[in-house]
Image (tube, rainbow, N blue to C red):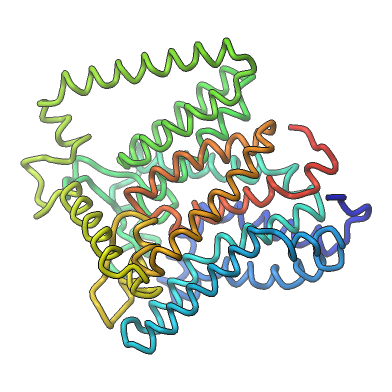
Length: 437
């Protein structure tokens, strides 16, 4: 596609608004909890970003429609068509669920919000980045500068601040827990920094760590310090799925960043050696009490009635059973985080975003979502020569793994950041102007 020869001032301003949204996302939970606890209307504060995206979407679509190449993309892109069909599936199943009394309006609306927003944001970012290169040229700053604050505050939570420090900012039983622990043991704190919880922090680090590696790979001293700080933050989150997800992301971005086949072969051998070493260490200390407490979460001293492992396994089994028994889905809001708000039925938390999608909108909806993922990844792979695309491909591998045992795409920060950056990476202006990393 040919990029426009002139950049409308409106497009530039809208791009900086999107940049502000992306930069503020890691602090969204902190500020909205603080504001909501002091002024009330917590949910109203929490939808600031969705409201901003809707306001930006209108003029963005108008600007894009005026450009023949972008108008053609909107008409012919299979990603746009799939997304529109995905929306129709959600709306139709939601209308059925509302009529059948299976879901209330609050849970239905919340489900639409958390499950449709990030793909819509992807399209908005794609169009804006096609109109002006501002977002693409500044993606590192947009992602890494907030990450420095997140990592610093997270380390401070463990090293300096009191365990319940966040209670001074409205955290508590009615908002977000002021602190998290492993199996209710205070000696095993899980840091959450400014994100919604420890698991979202871990998933966020699966995006940050590959970005650090791709950005600082030629500055080895700074790279070592940054990876140590980010890796420590990830470790202290105690999110085991994020440990594995970030490890996968790190391996992929490192492999993709190596310039020669010989270097990649050596890296593959090193990765296998490290994997074998870790496996051997785990086998050696498998009966160690600290290993049981810290890694397996199977402590005999836990005050929790059920371990997190037991809860997760049971939830996954229930999720599979729900899809088998109801292949059309129970309707948006009947599963996942939204189902906590559903007064018409008990919450269904499958601990797997893909199963959640199947529970809500059935096998057809799940296949549509997988097709959207496949379409974006295919296009990213075709542009894998840039740092941003390598970071996105690597982090997608890690976050996809995390989604197998949690609801990572339901988290505001992780989903909007990754899909927004994916839209920026795929924007036609990048190919037309041949911007270099």
